[in-house]
Image (cartoon, rainbow, N blue to C red; front, side, top):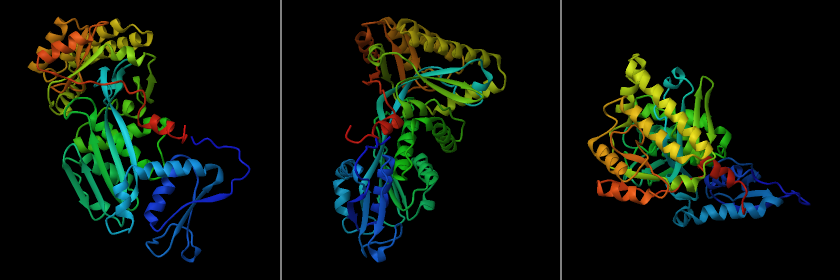
Length: 441
C-alpha cells in the first residue's frame, strides 16, 4: 500500500503533461497500482478525460502534493525502462509504442511432493491431500506497452514467435501463443497493446513454466488496467488462470503451479471442498537450497499424457491408481511435516518414497535416461530423487545429504543430465507487487 503522509496540504500539483490520451491513461493506471490518486484533464475545451485528444491539446496529470515526489520516481523508472519506446511515441504515430512499459515477473517452481493431487476432482476424493513446492528464480517475464489505436501485437522472445491483429477479436486462439492470446482477450485491455514475453525456464522442463508465464502476463495486464492483484487475490487468480490454461491444453489442469508463481517461498497447498489453502512453510531457504540439485534431461512429453492417464485410471476406480495416489498423499504430508520442523533428512527420504508411489501410477512417468540419473545420484549419496511435474523427461529434483550437493551434481553431469543452478525465490508476482507499493523504500 502507498503510505499516506500527513502534510500541510493535499492540493493537487501538476505532475506532467502529454498529448497522448493513451499515455495519460497508462500513467493514471500505473499510479493507481501504487495507490496514488490522480486527475487527468485536457486543455481542449477544458474537458475531463477520457477522450481522444491526439495532438489537438495537452493533457495535464495532477497528483496530491504529498505524493508528487514518489509519483515522479515511479513514472521516471518505468519510462527509463523503455527509452526506444519513448522516442517512437513522441509523435504519437500510428502503431507507435507509448513511452511507458509495465512488467510482470513470476518464478517457476520445483514440486517436492504431492503433484497430481491438485487436479480436480482428485483432491476431493482423497484424505487430507497436500502438495508441497518451492518457488525458484528461473522465471517468466512479460512486458506490456500501449500502441495507438486498437492494434494488438504479441511476441515471445524465447519461442521466436509472434502474432498480431488490427483489434483484440482478431487474435487467433490456437498456435504457440494460444495461452498469451487467451489471457489478453480475457482481460480485454482498452486501446492498442504490445505484449512481449520471455522465460528462463527450459521447454518441457516440468517446472511450471507455462503457469509462471500466465501469472507474469496477468499481473502486468492487471497493473496496466490500474487494478493490481494483491496477495489475497491468489486463490481467485489461480483458479482463473488454471481454467484458461485448461482451455488451451484441452485437458484438466492442476492449480499448484500458480501459487509459487504468485506468492513465492516454500509452500504447502492443502485441498478441501472449500478450496485451496496456501501455507508458507518455515524452512530456511538457504538450508533447503544446499540440499537440492535440479537436473534437466531434455524436453518432456506433454504433462497431459501422464496426468491424463493417472486421472482416467483414478476416476475409473482402478485400485492401483486409488492406492497409489493415496500413498502419494501420505508421503507429501510427511514432506510437509518434516520441512515444518526443519528435519531435512526426513524430508528427503519422504520425497523418495513419494517417487516410489508415483511410479505405480503410470508407466509414462520415468524414462530410461531418468532411471540412469536416479541410479547415479543414489550412488553419489542422494537421499531421494523425484521427477518434476508429470515426468516423462524434463527435470528431476534430487535431495542430498548435508554437504553432499556437489558430489550428486557431479554424478548427474557424468550421467548426461544438465544441472540447472537456481536460488529459492522468497517472493512471487503478488508479493513483489505489494512490496513495490512503497516507492522509494
